[in-house]
Length: 111
Image: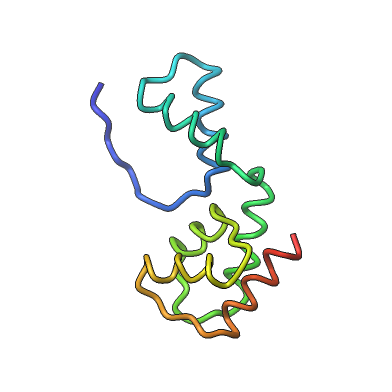
Protein backbone atom coordinates (compact mmCIF):
# COMPACT_ATOMS: atom_id res chain seq x y z
CA UNK A 1 0.00 0.00 0.00
CA UNK A 2 1.48 3.32 -1.07
CA UNK A 3 1.07 6.16 1.41
CA UNK A 4 0.29 9.67 0.19
CA UNK A 5 1.20 12.55 2.48
CA UNK A 6 -1.65 15.06 2.49
CA UNK A 7 -0.18 17.53 4.98
CA UNK A 8 2.54 17.63 7.56
CA UNK A 9 1.93 19.06 11.02
CA UNK A 10 3.13 18.49 14.55
CA UNK A 11 0.71 16.51 16.71
CA UNK A 12 0.79 15.93 20.44
CA UNK A 13 1.45 12.35 21.51
CA UNK A 14 -2.06 12.18 22.99
CA UNK A 15 -3.64 12.86 19.58
CA UNK A 16 -1.38 10.36 17.80
CA UNK A 17 -2.33 7.77 20.42
CA UNK A 18 -6.06 8.44 19.85
CA UNK A 19 -5.66 8.11 16.07
CA UNK A 20 -3.81 4.80 16.42
CA UNK A 21 -6.34 3.43 18.92
CA UNK A 22 -9.13 4.14 16.40
CA UNK A 23 -7.12 2.49 13.62
CA UNK A 24 -6.44 -0.49 15.86
CA UNK A 25 -10.17 -0.92 16.54
CA UNK A 26 -11.01 -0.85 12.84
CA UNK A 27 -8.31 -3.30 11.84
CA UNK A 28 -4.80 -4.50 12.43
CA UNK A 29 -1.97 -1.98 12.63
CA UNK A 30 1.16 -2.34 10.50
CA UNK A 31 4.44 -3.10 12.25
CA UNK A 32 5.58 0.52 12.34
CA UNK A 33 2.14 1.72 13.45
CA UNK A 34 2.18 -0.82 16.29
CA UNK A 35 5.62 0.38 17.42
CA UNK A 36 4.39 3.97 17.41
CA UNK A 37 1.25 2.90 19.30
CA UNK A 38 3.40 1.18 21.94
CA UNK A 39 5.56 4.32 22.24
CA UNK A 40 2.59 6.66 22.57
CA UNK A 41 0.95 4.41 25.16
CA UNK A 42 4.14 4.39 27.21
CA UNK A 43 5.07 8.08 27.03
CA UNK A 44 1.70 9.81 26.78
CA UNK A 45 1.29 12.16 29.77
CA UNK A 46 -2.01 13.89 28.91
CA UNK A 47 -5.28 13.06 27.24
CA UNK A 48 -6.19 14.67 23.93
CA UNK A 49 -8.33 17.48 25.41
CA UNK A 50 -5.75 18.36 28.07
CA UNK A 51 -3.02 18.52 25.41
CA UNK A 52 -5.16 20.74 23.16
CA UNK A 53 -5.96 23.07 26.06
CA UNK A 54 -2.29 23.33 27.04
CA UNK A 55 -1.23 24.02 23.44
CA UNK A 56 -3.83 26.81 23.17
CA UNK A 57 -2.73 28.39 26.47
CA UNK A 58 0.96 28.39 25.51
CA UNK A 59 0.22 29.74 22.02
CA UNK A 60 -1.88 32.59 23.45
CA UNK A 61 0.76 33.52 26.06
CA UNK A 62 2.35 35.90 23.56
CA UNK A 63 5.87 34.50 23.61
CA UNK A 64 7.84 35.79 20.59
CA UNK A 65 9.34 33.35 18.05
CA UNK A 66 7.60 30.32 19.59
CA UNK A 67 6.56 28.01 16.74
CA UNK A 68 3.70 25.49 16.73
CA UNK A 69 6.23 22.64 16.43
CA UNK A 70 8.01 23.91 19.53
CA UNK A 71 4.75 24.25 21.48
CA UNK A 72 3.74 20.68 20.61
CA UNK A 73 7.17 19.42 21.68
CA UNK A 74 6.80 21.26 25.01
CA UNK A 75 3.37 19.68 25.54
CA UNK A 76 4.76 16.23 24.70
CA UNK A 77 7.65 16.58 27.15
CA UNK A 78 5.91 18.52 29.94
CA UNK A 79 9.18 20.01 31.23
CA UNK A 80 9.32 20.45 34.99
CA UNK A 81 12.06 23.07 35.14
CA UNK A 82 13.93 25.65 33.10
CA UNK A 83 16.73 23.25 32.23
CA UNK A 84 14.35 20.73 30.67
CA UNK A 85 12.55 23.52 28.81
CA UNK A 86 15.83 24.88 27.42
CA UNK A 87 16.50 21.54 25.70
CA UNK A 88 13.42 22.12 23.54
CA UNK A 89 14.66 25.55 22.52
CA UNK A 90 18.23 24.43 21.85
CA UNK A 91 16.99 21.60 19.65
CA UNK A 92 14.78 24.02 17.70
CA UNK A 93 17.49 26.72 17.59
CA UNK A 94 15.30 29.23 19.39
CA UNK A 95 16.10 31.82 22.00
CA UNK A 96 13.34 32.56 24.49
CA UNK A 97 13.65 35.08 27.30
CA UNK A 98 13.67 34.09 30.96
CA UNK A 99 10.25 35.72 31.31
CA UNK A 100 8.92 33.65 28.39
CA UNK A 101 10.24 30.43 29.90
CA UNK A 102 8.73 31.35 33.28
CA UNK A 103 5.36 31.94 31.58
CA UNK A 104 5.49 28.52 29.91
CA UNK A 105 6.48 26.75 33.13
CA UNK A 106 3.70 28.53 35.06
CA UNK A 107 1.15 27.48 32.43
CA UNK A 108 2.34 23.87 32.69
CA UNK A 109 2.28 23.93 36.51
CA UNK A 110 -1.28 25.31 36.50
CA UNK A 111 -2.53 22.22 34.65
